[in-house]
Image (cartoon, rainbow, N blue to C red):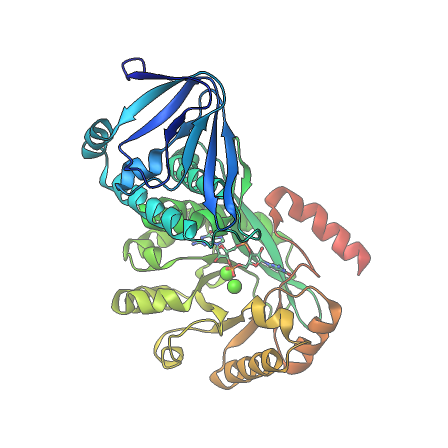
Amino acid sequence: MNDLPRDFFEESTVVFSAGDPGDSAYVIESGCVEILVDFRNGQRRVALLGEGALFGEVALLDCKPRTATVRTLLPTTLLRIDRKHIEELLRRSDPVVKYLLNLLLKRFRSVQGFIPGDPENASPMDFEQAALRTLTLTRDLSHAVDVNQLELFYQPLFDCTSRTLLGYEALIRWQHPTLGLVMPSEFISLAERTGIIHRIGNWVIERATRDWAELRSYCRRDDGLHPFVSINLSAAELGNPDVVSVIERCLKESGMPPGELKIELTETVIIEDRVVVAAVLEKLAGMGMMIALDDFGTGYAGLEYLRNLPISCLKIDKAFVQEMLTSLNCYEIVRAAISLAGSLGFSTIAEGIEDEATLLHLTELGCNIAQGFLLARPMPLASIGPWVEQYAAAA
Ligand code: C2E
Ligand code: CA
Ligand code: CA
């Protein structure tokens, strides 16, 4: 930073205006600036930035005109970062970084195309913050795997009729040191794009199989009940034949019977790499694993794969489950899914059950397995034992 050129501005000076070419970004060394955006009903301040803040970087990086005006509020010294400096850094940087940066810029620009003047619209700075958060998460993700910031939560699943505990779905969480608990909906797609998903997938397989002995001890094992833990595998993972040997090794090391591991996949997985995915699924099913189709009803894959792939369980998406008592369409979709599963010899899991009435209707329709906050939330391994005790005491 020390060798960057410094520009000094008097109070109330425009550093640049909306529409100007963007050739440089700035870091505020001292002083303060305001960011002004043109809305239909005039210019409005969307942010105040002080010492240490960075601005002007988006126009600099994507070579488009400035989208905001910046004016000093105090005498201000700025460190200037010129385009050629950035281009040199980018030229030397990793292709993944370049790709991500382009993607972020594209997204940032598209969300910035909001309608000026509409008070419902968030300010561009919110989007900048979102982009910064994405960058931070992407940067930290690989490290998170190395230093064990990931955690598997387990959500109990129940027999609909008897309400006994049958198994669990493993759901990943990331305990970020400064951002706190980060949910998979936020970081799994980043992991897929950067390839880190393979390391995460391996970690999930290892952890779930290792935790299984304890998890299994809490399940009822009456005749005909097969306790299980489900793991979610994304397209990138099931499109990689290596996943079979990873699962094989982990089952062996943990002594877990393959029949007690369930693999959940979505229709997107099937569409993405049909041939490899089919081969991988055949191998896993051949070893005795159950394959469940997740988010059933939300995809566009057609239905013929239900016959061609070794699927043995349908998971009805929570979008339908949660609306089934208020929307006739959702009710009919749930009913049809349960009946389709029944005629194909599959079992059904309904996820997202939050109230008693929904659970009763699902049970009446012949659904086999229930998952939802009504019965239990996802929780860390250490909480399962105490939770099971409480559940048994309440029954
Ligand atoms: P999913 O596979 O559809 O998982 C079910 C999601 O529904 C979980 O969200 C769970 O916490 C939530 N859920 C369960 N019961 C209820 C309920 O009664 N009400 C509501 N509102 N939600 C309920 P979560 O844990 O945030 O996971 C989101 C998604 O992230 C998962 O959706 C799955 O697609 C993905 N994911 C989670 N863990 C992993 C993982 O280890 N690997 C991969 N590849 N994806 C994962
Ligand atoms: Ca799932
Ligand atoms: Ca689901």
